[in-house]
Image (cartoon, rainbow, N blue to C red; front, side, top):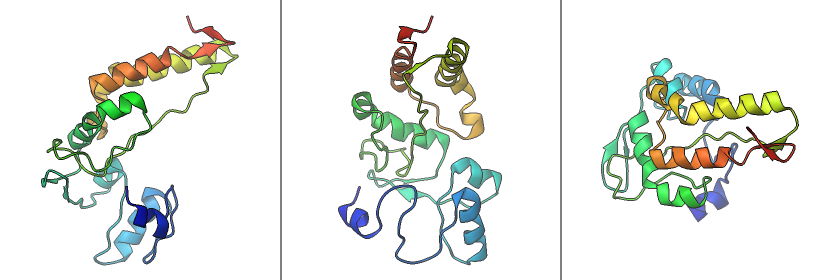
Length: 172
């Protein structure tokens, strides 16, 4: 989101922090934060809640201080629905001011699945699993502290799933 950040720190799963200590994954970051009074870290919400870590309310573009919750992440996703319809890789950070309840540093998780494959049973099982995750499985997302997908995104995911093939043929 920031050219200055991109130049000085970088982008990706590992960046060159100008100061401080890093940790590998949520467990490593948690360890560093617990060992350093006053430290701030960024971990997955579920991990933070399971480990009784304090969380921060972050001011979004609407000027609202929002606590990280599944509902606040869903609001962030929904605010980017038109952009996500064009490209599902669109970052959902820093939602517009119209998304008053959106947590400003939310992110999506992706399944990366080859479009075509040769094993009919495995491809069908994989498609059925992902179909469950983006439809009926959404009912349990909040219980696991994950953001349920807005209907428009679920519909888009279902359309994408229809592109999966076995040896170039649609999955029946």
